[in-house]
Image 1 (cartoon, rainbow, N blue to C red):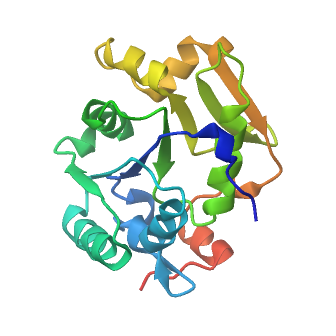
Image 2 (cartoon, helix red, strand yellow):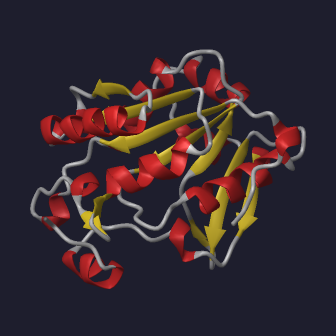
Length: 213
């Protein structure tokens, strides 16, 4: 088990992007798929609870009602504070959810983790590894991005400074910020496939041991 370095004293904000349609699987709420008897949402909430985030925002959109019901259940079950925000413009794509999340964050954080709801193997250890890498970044580096075998992974972490800069430019989101500022990205090269594994197709479901019900 990894451990978060006590010296970091990071105030961590978590954003969970759960607004997608799951169209490649026939319009499925992927966050509600199950692994080992728990929804992917429950597995994610379990992972982040140990990090004691100062803020946890979940963006819903397509399939908002059942996903929000599960989030409310988990908030009570785990005594976890979850701010649920529905993206009324979810059909315009993930960037709109990212922008909505950035605009909804408060000011009391040092780093925000942009997380996807369909990465079944992202757990506490993976998040802590990212945070420890973020602590060790250079003073000019405002983004921590995992990379596995040359492939960009998720979640990516952004400093408060980066989040503030994005908000000052209409329409800017995390991906465009990274494309514009490659020199401000710290790459975390890892051999942990969890950072690049997500659920997009029925083949992924079978490969990752996921159940629809």
